[in-house]
Every structure is written in structure tokens, then in C-alpha cells.
Length: 382
Ligand SMILES: Cc1cc2nc3c(=O)[nH]c(=O)nc-3n(C[C@H](O)[C@H](O)[C@H](O)COP(=O)(O)OP(=O)(O)OC[C@H]3O[C@@H](n4cnc5c(N)ncnc54)[C@H](O)[C@@H]3O)c2cc1C
Image 1 (tube, helix red, strand yellow):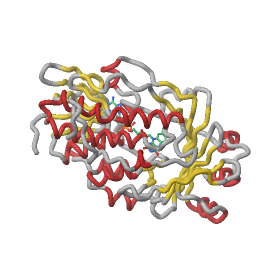
Image 2 (cartoon, helix red, strand yellow):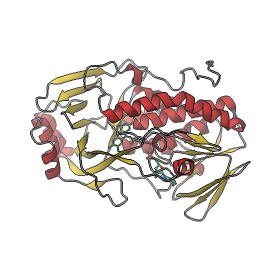
Image 3 (spheres, rainbow, N blue to C red):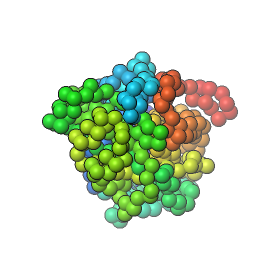
Image 4 (cartoon, rainbow, N blue to C red):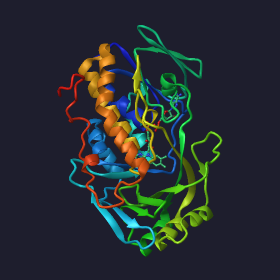
């Protein structure tokens, strides 16, 4: 299909880049506006569950993602002190591979798949004004754009969310996440001492450490924690530098493998984990929200980006069903078909209970945002 009407996506993060790719492939005229002047490969990993890899298939990027990342057989949960396995979920058999990968590598793949002439860096949205027949966008470099609809994929501090619901700071969850990579000789030494799990979460009553490979060759290992912590003053940044000493203190008494991972890690960072309560509305007029702009969560289920990418897939389907002229119906359909699932994942992720005990994870991984029947507004299914 070809559409003469224009879509603007604000934010080229994991959700915005997915929406851009899917909508452009579907024939929509889409420009993506990103505030950053460029993206860099910051030290962090990400899980991409089979529910999301199916969408990478639709984006035409599945094989390339598989070449980048590791493909664990299972998510293993261990007791943080004894190392005993307390739960192990097979992540195979859900219609696509489970992949763990460097977040920067995955994001670069997504961004490179966009029409580069429609990707605009250094464009921080300052204002968006709705008129009867259009939206006027203004960016911090003084430039403007006129479009038909605006997708707010601009993360937890979303400007579009603010326009819909007013200014409101996100809620500090009371927890932080430490992130670090382990590479080179330090990783080889660690591998010689311990039989590292491909994908493992080490649990304790009130904290945990998740660790996994971020490359197919298994030459980069990554950990991310969840630890209760007083509020941090990050002075407007997303994270601060942390230290080995802070990590030893936070994980005192934990299994020797954890102590060895801390010793082997480099450039440890600490991230305040923020979230929001479920929003009363996901769209208004010509504005619609997606991903962390809409339902940010603590990252303990490793599905935050997953929900953003599922949103992108469902929003594309709804716009294809109605056409851009009837964006009002598309936005209603999108919310109807996404809200329950995203809110459930948000709640389970915030509670940090997923796979702490043996459970069937198929409700997360077997889902396919591309083929699940769309519930229609009158209740019928198409
Ligand atoms: C420690 C940690 C670990 C995580 N691990 C996982 C995991 O393993 N698996 C998983 O699925 N999720 C994980 N997540 C969650 C995941 O990172 C987020 O849910 C995901 O990034 C949300 O994608 P998004 O596109 O909605 O927002 P973002 O990725 O935050 O992207 C928003 C984009 O919008 C841009 N932007 C913001 N404001 C403006 C503006 N005014 N104008 C223009 N551009 C703007 C930003 O620069 C950014 O590029 C983790 C999160 C954390 C903190």
C-alpha cells in the first residue's frame, strides 16, 4: 500500500525503531525523530524472547539478530547463596529462538533497517500542537514538521505522554540495577573456573543478579542486578558509575561465582529503576503512545523492550486495518488489544516473581503479536 498521509515517530529507541521499520515496510510514510545526535554501544545486554524474535522475522532482521546473539536453551534460576537450581524454564519450542544480545548491537541493527533519509538525529521534540487536520511539531534546533499522526516512542520521560496527561515525574521503584560486561582474558579465567550458564538469574530474598552471554561466540558475558537502594541523584543522567567495592557490599555472602563475576567485570554502572502506574489513556486525538512512554516497568522479566516492540507490531496491524484516515479507530483497537497484556507484564515485572519458582512461561513466549486475532471494538474478532 502507499499512503500520502504522514506519520511522525518521536524517539528511535528499541520501540520507535521497530515501529518505524514495521510501518515503513507496510507502506506508510514515516519519519523518525531522535533527540540524540547519534547512538553509541553502551555496556548493556538484552533478552529477546521468542515473542519478539517473531517480530524481528517480520522486520526481515531475524537471521541477522541470530548472528549477533547467543541462543540459550533455558532460563535458569539459582539460589544466590548455594547455587542450587530452583527453577529452569526451557525457552525453546515457542516458534522462534530466544536470543540474548548486546543491546547496542541489536539497536544498531534496527536503526540501520530504517529508511535513512527518514531518520532524523539531533531533533529533540519541544512542542506538538494538534489542529483539526494536522499536527505541527517543533524541535530544539528550530526546525518544524507537519504530520497527520504522532507516535510517542520517546521513553519514560515522554514529551507526548506529558502533552496527553500533564507533567509528572516517573516513580522511583526503590531499586537500582548495576550493569557490567566481562570480556577477554577475564572472561576466559571465569569460564575456566565456573561452568557459566548461558542465561541465569541468581536470586536472594530482596535482590538478584541476572547474567548471560551477549554474543553468539560467547566471548562477552553481562550481568544486570536488582538491588534495593535509597534514591540516587543522577543529575539528569540515566545512570552513574559504580564500583567493585559497592558490588561486593551489595552481594556479600553470595555464591563464589558471583564474587568472581564482580571481580572480572569492568566499567560497572548503576541505574535507578523508575516506573509509572498504568496510564488512564494511551492516545488522544492524533497522538498515541508506545513502549516505555506508555508502560515503563522494572526490567526484571526482561520484557520491557519486548512490550514496546509488540506494541509496534499491533499498532501497525491496527493502522493497516483501518487506514490512516481512521486513526481514531486504529488507536482504540490498539489500546484494546495491548493494554491487558502490557499491564500484566508490567505488574509481574515490577513484583519480580517471574521464574523465581518453576512456572510455565508460555503466556509470555508463545504469544505472537502478528497473528493473534485482533479483538474488534464491538467485541468480534477479525
Ligand atoms: C537495567 C535495565 C535492563 C533492561 N533489560 C531489558 C531486557 O533484558 N529485555 C527487555 O525487553 N527490556 C529490558 N529493559 C527495558 C528496556 O530497556 C525498555 O523497556 C526499552 O528500552 C523501552 O523502549 P522504548 O523505545 O519505549 O524507549 P527507549 O528505549 O527509552 O527509547 C526512547 C527514545 O526516545 C528518545 N527521546 C526521548 N525524548 C525525546 C524527545 N523529546 N524528542 C526526540 N527523541 C526523544 C530517546 O533519546 C530514546 O532514543 C531494561 C531496562 C533497564 C533499565
